[in-house]
Amino acid sequence: MTSDAFCLGDRVVAVTEINGCVLEGRTGTVCHMLNNDGNIGVCWDLDEDEVDFALDEGMHTCCDHCEDGYGWYVLPEDIALHNEARDFEDFELSAIDILFA
Ligand SMILES: [Zn+2]
Image 1 (cartoon, rainbow, N blue to C red):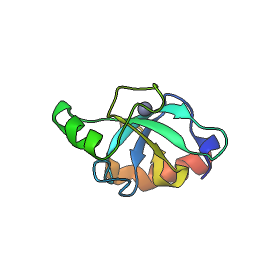
Image 2: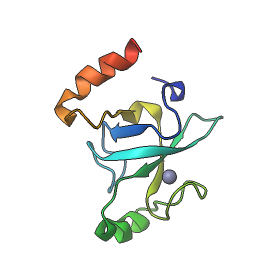
Image 3: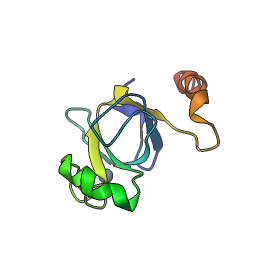
Image 4: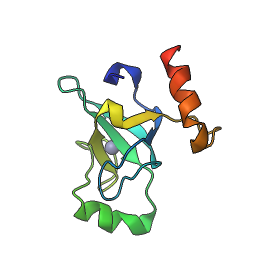
């Protein structure tokens, strides 16, 4: 999957451990697209009490695209589109849907 599969505002889910804070299954919202290297800025869904840890991990604002500590750039293969109506267990299905979208 390439970064073309994602748009600003898309809800996404991590499909692997991305950093110490963003583990598999963590959801977030695409907040910044980088054109050249294909990295995607995601504002991750963190609880307030996780933000200090996130900042320690080096998480940031995605160049002022989200609140400090919530942002992290990811590779497109590390995330998938996330439909809130589905459980994470249905992720395989949504990945197939994306292929034929
Ligand atoms: Zn962000």
